[in-house]
Image (cartoon, rainbow, N blue to C red; front, side, top):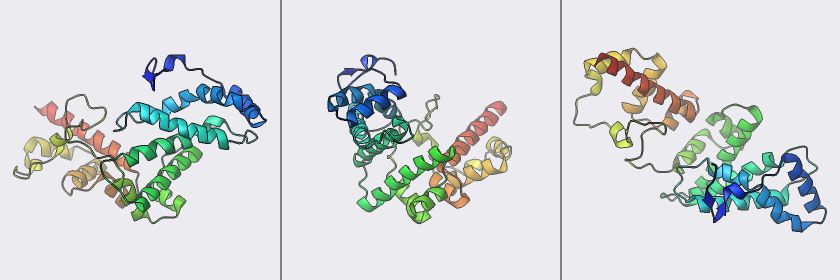
Length: 257
């Protein structure tokens, strides 16, 4: 993001406070100078902008996400203790993300019960905490243990709040070949595609784990989350394996043709 307008504010004109400047200003605000609060919030609004950029596919407009993220920044500003040995941005990011994700969930086309939403919200916070503290991708089992909720309830809650995908959306976020989701759905009236000689040969060239993932996804119809649960992996790992396997499969077939 270089120069865009959001909520009628040109982002190129936003000030940019360093961590040291932010800490000093916060101490002054807490010690009786509330007039600096607005300048502090404006000086850290780029942090909110960067969080909004994490949700390019959200069905909520960027202006609304930015305003919601600013609410999270305000909460972080009011509750942060400058005496703690931690940067303000480290403290603020989870609050900003929490507010943004809440609005995205509430604007989902599917209505989910409050109890399920609460579990999903706690699970997402736990994921962020685990990944921040351990610098590694959090598994669903670790998330369930962190919030003390049964594994199955966590996976069900995360699946329930997932944004519905249009059949005409790109099949993969990085795909540039025009393939949409509907192109990946099998036609039941067509003979089993694995019986095609070229495809069968290409399929056998994949690694055992890659063949397993494709079999579970396209022949047993399991979701990525269900596969992750069954094999104690993260959904992100399953997604990467599936994507890489399909790329290899296509490369093998194209080399034959």
